[in-house]
Image 1 (cartoon, rainbow, N blue to C red):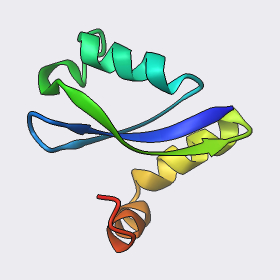
Image 2: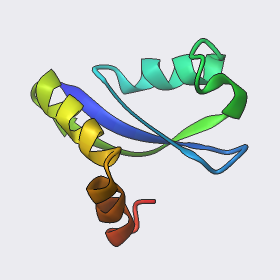
Image 3: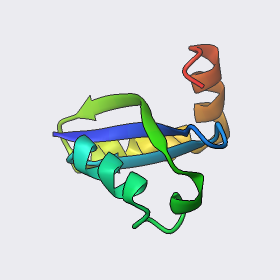
Image 4: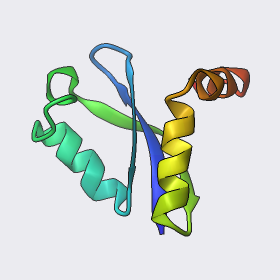
Length: 80
């Protein structure tokens, strides 16, 4: 299984979008400071996620979330 996820920074209230096959491990990585982009915005909480059967589906959904249409969809459903 693969996941597309949205993290929320407790420090800055900003969001981070990604995909992974292991949500818990990925969240730990972000909160450990080993990810360059997210280390200065720690701590992170898992805000939202979706599950997929394939890596390609998860990547496509991440790309959608990062698009203007994805942003509008997330706002429409009060996810962000």
